[in-house]
Amino acid sequence: MFLRDEVAVNYLAGAILLTFPWLGIVLGTWGFIWGALMLLAVFLVGRRRGLPIAALSLLIGYVAPLIVFGATAFNQMSLVPLAGLLCVLGWHKHWPVRVIFFWGAALAAVLGTIPTLPFMAQGFSALTASDMINTAYQQYQASGLLAVMQQQGITEVQVRDMLQQGIQIYALILPGLAALVAIVEFGLAFYIARIWFDENEGRIPFMRWRLPWYAVWGAVLGIALYLLGDQFSWTVLRGAGINLMVVYGALTLVLGISVLVYLLQSPRIPRFLKFALIIASFMYLFLSGVSLILFGLFDLVFNFRRLPEES
Image 1 (cartoon, rainbow, N blue to C red):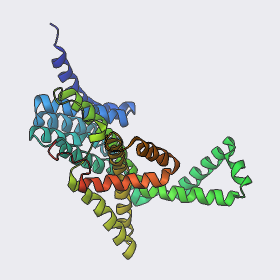
Image 2 (image 1 turned 90 degrees about the vertical axis):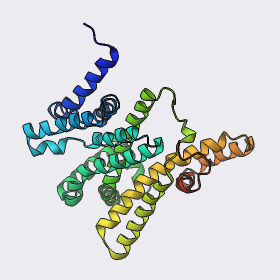
Image 3 (image 1 turned 90 degrees about the horizontal axis):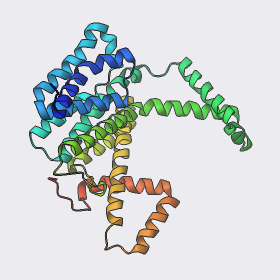
Image 4 (image 1 turned 45 degrees about the horizontal axis):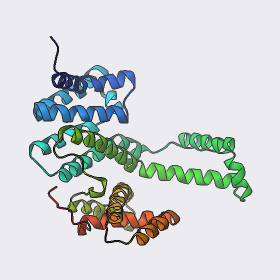
């Protein structure tokens, strides 16, 4: 007896939820693609078999490795697929698409930063930092970049100081980078699932991408935390604010590009002005990037494209 394609896919999705967590530990395959496949499985099982089945299958999948391998297994697993359950709830409650994506992505970002918290508490050891600096220095030397820098009057000590500062910045924004990776992972799975399930509705064109207006409060919170932490020398608040601004900087850059593409396709704007905007964007990349970030941020409040909130 042959299974229909839909039934076979349902069984496969359930098997992924039950087996992928411990398989990822045994095979060492936990990563971006692994998490995205689990998210797709959550969406599939949740939409077709219900939220309780999806939640139970995912819970069993996560608990089994903890029983077999102990608490150390927790450090090797990504929690981002759990955000898919909130998406499934939103679909069943008929939330607007932007609302589902925003809250799902926000939860994915929080879950994605959890593995970085122990590192943030401990930081890089002196030995680890020294090894990273030596490795980077050797790579500069092998590529010939070091010789070019020395011709510019930059000494070895200055190079090592710059590398040390880079390591400190990386350590500071590591949670934000982890959150961005989690958002991209969630967004990819969400995009594929939306195409898969919403045949009648289809894809939302890039120039119509938008988040709910209240998403702007996350950026406001990031700025407030940074200012408070800087004012009172509270390292934790300052770091949280910086990481929130890193995340929102990337998100609003994408939204700003979406607004720009929308405006460039508008027949009301002369072609000469469109051409001038494109040329200026490439000539002044930094200024253009900052402008697009601000444009995307203010679009959350003012809705320059007049897109309906409920879509």
